[in-house]
Amino acid sequence: MIIAVASGKGGTGKTTVATNLALALQNSVYLDCDVEEPNGHLFLKPVVEKSETVTRPVPRINYTKCDFCGECSRVCESHAITVLPNRVLVFDELCNSCGACTYFCPQNAIWEEKIPMGVIRIGKVLPENIGFFEGCLTIGELSPSPLIGKVVQKIEPEKINILDAAPGASCSMIETVRNADYCLLITEPTPFGLNDLELAVEALKNIEVPFGIVINKARSDSTIIDAYCEDNNIPILMRFPFNRRLAEAYSKGELAVRVFPELKEQFQNLFNEIKLRLQTSVNVLDG
Ligand code: SF4
Ligand code: SF4
Image (cartoon, rainbow, N blue to C red; front, side, top):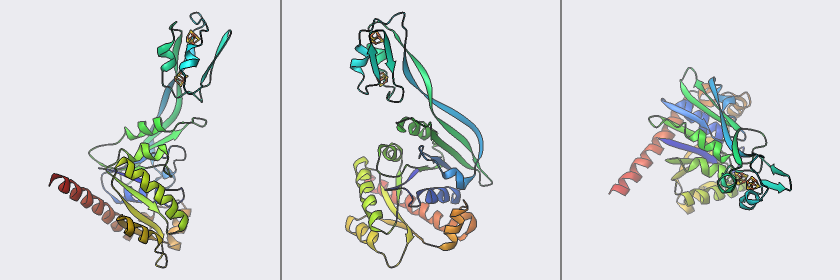
């Protein structure tokens, strides 16, 4: 099973839920797909066993063949190649590695160099023996999606995979969540939280991934998210109340389910609720 954990904006407790859920379950794998700012490792403190460098191809010019015709520049929609009278300039940071310039060069004068675009760190969280994968984008790389795709390829189908998505309703979030069986959207009971939640909900409806809500810092005197979910028939699967001791544990990089073992059952119940909803939806489709 693949469960993505996302949020309309940063700082809502997305990684808190993703890491605690992974730790509360047996036979789980945590994959940090928030490759521009991965921080699950701060809480899970994995033993890293190896790192894999992820590369992408960028064009390089063979000047013994190039006649400076300019075709490569014309076909490049990213404006990543400029042809001068006696030189071809390639701007790696603008290049999206589509390969069009290589394909269309009439002189076969372009070869491709592989440059690093990021790293995937692979390890284990002990003693629970949780699988750990983390994508980390190279500074200056403009497109996180290819690296996210590589992290997602590490999914272990026979296990429970928790994907920690980038915040917001951006391409990065979609690139992660579209691979999931179910998505948890984490939000806070504030007008800002609701505004960003609405954007994330629209994105999830477009890619047709089933989802439910977790309210972080839930307060009995704020029903703004409850009213929205009721109006839109969206299930609220868990409420994570504000708790000073929890906040202190978080600030020290400690995981809630380790500090408060009673929370483990709540996260296991959350998983069981997701499983039930997926089974029910399959039964409805079968019926
Ligand atoms: S298309 Fe090929 S031959 Fe023409 S300028 Fe570009 S690299 Fe040189
Ligand atoms: S690989 Fe694509 S994006 Fe990069 S320079 Fe060539 S045409 Fe442009």
